[in-house]
Image 1 (spheres, rainbow, N blue to C red):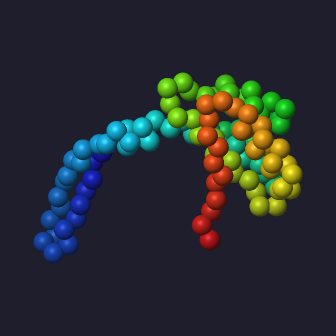
Image 2 (cartoon, rainbow, N blue to C red):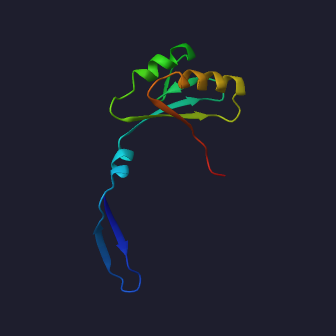
Length: 106
C-alpha cells in the first residue's frame, strides 16, 4: 500500500511504503455480497431481483471458499420490520457468512 504524506511546512511530499500487517491482508480478501430490500419490499442480490424463497441458494452460489464472506444487508427505512426479519433469518441460515446491516450517517 502506498501512502503520500504532505509536509505542510516545507511544501515537500514524502512517499512512504508502509509494511502490511497480516490483518490488513485478510481484510483485503473479503467477499462482499450485497442484499437490498427496497421500499416496495422487492429483494435484490448484487443488484438483481431475487425471490425470498431463492435468496439462500442464490447467496450460497456467491460464497467463495478461503475468503471471508460478508453479506451486507441494505434495507429501506420504510420496509415492514417483519419482512426484514424474514430476509435476515434466511441469511443467517447460510454457513460461512457473516451478515451486517448497512447504515447511513446523518
